[in-house]
Length: 250
Image 1 (tube, one colour):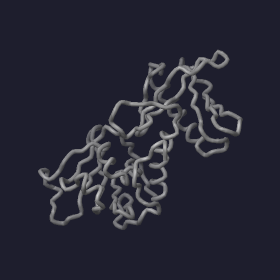
Image 2: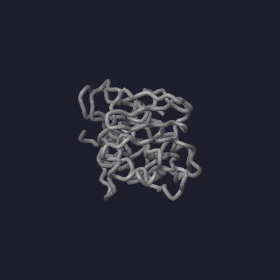
Image 3: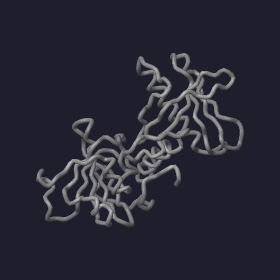
């Protein structure tokens, strides 16, 4: 598959696939709201290559109005306006992927690629070697019962550790307090919480959610201390903690 990017300098531009028809799939176009030469072109190409592999791995094809989960958001493919008789699908994304109301889609993949880049960059910046384990919004974390929304929002120090997940529903993340008198081995002191609700109260956790197993974090109001897998010494992330979940308006 080849990907063609608009030659024009000014936005809006387009990225259009060539070669999906050989798989029995309509070609896909993505509107780009930035100028030529932007690094995001490469991220869009990566996204389209992921979609190509998804299509090649299954017997069914993407049709108009079908949705596809991509990272922490959802893409939708709609019939593109006919241009020179082209039979194409246009990519759209959720406008507010962290909200729980009725979905509203907008053209493009701007936020989708930003969210994934935010997580990839956190791993690279902190040298978190090992296999990334992708999380999804429907997955859960285990928290101690002292990690309330109030505790998350009021600047309490928080411990986050990633272990192996025994099933697809559980992300492997444990979020706990740092109080020495609290027994985190007592199941009566633990809760199961959806990741989507957890990051609403603690946005600082979001960039690290795909970190390899055995990664640990200490989240503080002014910094996140990152412990790479199997390392006893942690180092402050050079980027300040995320204070709000990203939106298209940011």
